[in-house]
Image (cartoon, rainbow, N blue to C red; front, side, top):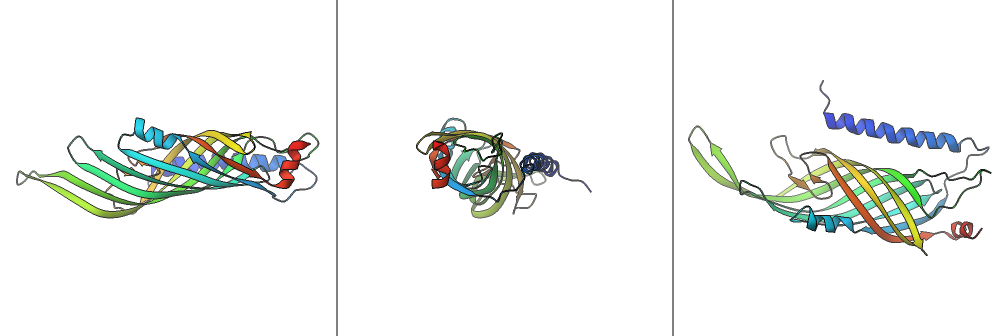
Length: 243
């Protein structure tokens, strides 16, 4: 049985991230007592890079997105990202592709910095470097116009159009970045993402040229995000910064 190459890549990436997470967990378990996860705050942010890159690099593409995450023990950051994108592009053969859709990503960031000092006490974290995983999904409303179809046997050609079509698409993302707390909760940071297209509801003869939240579905996608936002710390966590 042939296994699609993209599935092998996803499996390898998942194993790599899992290995890092297990190594971090093993290091924490060296303490005499294993502490329960603690809620330390939350963060919300918007991405500035996506709309800018849409105007500069991906002409005809408009994207806006933001996210919300929780801080658990300064180690785990479950995250929800929401966005909306539209695309209107013309191919060389004169056909036109247009699509609009909201998109969503669910995942987790893992803090790569040590969460305890030499004495085994929890360390406060205003800044952290991380790696993360996401699963993205979108229900795309798309249309194709002026698609040339040629019938060689009859030596005929015609232009076809489809409108009001909907399709579901899903993909995975491996991300790495840094988050910095500038002043009184004002947060900024950047991240890079490798996106791997997994599946869509269309059959093999059809394709979604552009998937909002992902990009061109013909191959893997690599993107850059630059965020600005606000981070809230619990009273207990803020007390650590003063010590």
